[in-house]
Image: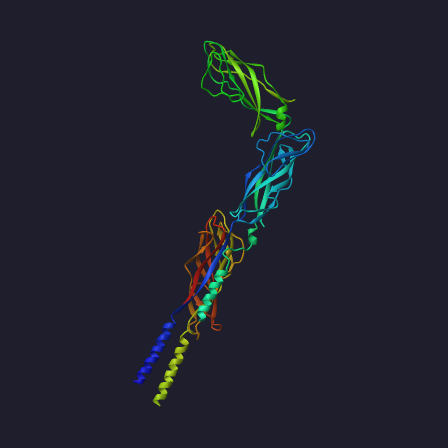
Length: 166
Length: 174
Length: 159
């Protein structure tokens, strides 16, 4: 009787071990990613100085970032039709700050005639901050240099402004 | 007991983690974006006039008696005293865009208008006279504008048809 | 004499039994979570694929690779003791959902492993093997900006 009991115990032990061998183990892990909206800039209005009237001595027309004009030297202001600062919408990661690079001086031309546009200003100036929703408005002004007997005509030229995350 | 302590430790860690990352943007995000724009300026020398609308007296029905038809430069309706009747049609004062003068100079501009202008047409060679030209300088958001009205005399039984003529206006700084 | 043989036999059976409980388990611990790093969006959808072997992220479609911390998930699989059959099977998740700001989500699928799914072989000397896991992240056009996170389970089994 004792023999039978011991034999049974051994068999039971082997069977138990066999079942424990079909096993799995697991570990939980997390996966994460950060989505960033790249910065972008879109023009909403070109810069327009309107009509300017030379008067025999050189001068400048200053266009502010708010679109108002003033003069220095001998140039007079003509019609203000369509006068506007250049405006842009900057878009990107909410609440991020960005650096603004303004263009340098360059000529606007009417046929073979030229005038220089330079001393660009902006609002914001230097650094801007995107709203929590990820946008901002950028305004550009500049100074136009008009010669003493600048030839009449419509003068145009192309410029560019750059923005980048800080 | 050991297992329970481990679980509690993990739970505490989870609560302490911030819900929103405050790390700065990665270097790769510092890619610049560029926008091009135009700058435009119109150089005008002295004053300039650019017609934007011809003077149009519109259609009239002549009557048995002579009369006249007036278009005023202030957008008021046509006046037709006398023997003519206005007929439905498009009509309007002449309009000119004035360029080259600063807004303040508007009050120092002298406008020169014609005295009388003959319009010809009708059935052929018929004539009408336009006179009593009146001008008005208007400053608005678009700029400085010169609006010119006049009166046209219509004879009794005036021959029907279209009558046209040309005239010149001048502005000077006084 | 009879009594002695029975006692020895019983002791032998007990010896076999003790190691079977607990120590016969395969086990796995996590070393690192799966991180895709920072990705830039655009008006076009795309993917970011994290290579299980190299931990490098490559992008397709309108997704921009912006850097940041990128890691393949990493696990150490430990063989049962004694090291008899050292082979095991890797079971990767079918997909996972990452939750971001508001109700924004992104799907992670096409999980891969190194060694490749689904055969693993524990080193006889160390009784361990490190398994790294990569996957593909699906980014929608104009995906909402912010931090996204989700969980998944890495499973190993042996017969």
